[in-house]
Length: 117
Image (cartoon, rainbow, N blue to C red; front, side, top):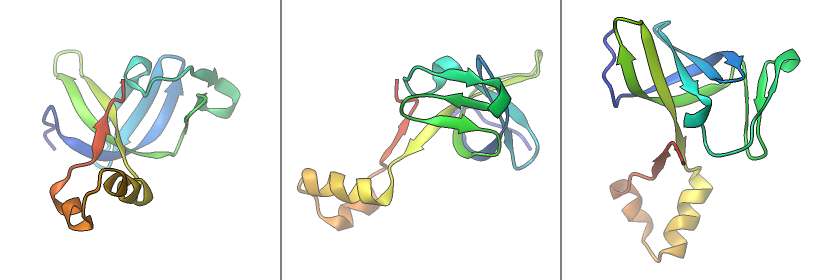
C-alpha cells in the first residue's frame, strides 16, 4: 500500500514511549504520533501500564485512532502521523444548535479537528 501525505487512516496503538505513540495501520505499516503532535495536555508516561496519561485524554496500547499522515521519509523509513479528533454525534448536534444551523447542514459540514494545537 502506498501512503500519501495528508491521507486520513484508521489504526491502533502498538507502542507507547515518553516521546509519543506508535500506531499500526490495517496494512501493518507503523508510524508515530510524536508527543508534540498530540492534543495539548501535560502527559505522563506510565511505563508499567503502557499508557501515556494526560489530564484530558490518555493513550493505551490497543486504542483505535484515526490519524493523518503528515510525513513519510523513504530513506529513513519513518512515517509521522497526527491525531484526527472527530466530534461525537452529540457534540455535532450541540454545535449546530449553538450556531442556529439546521440539521441538514450536517451533510455539508466537515467537523473534524486535526492536531488541536
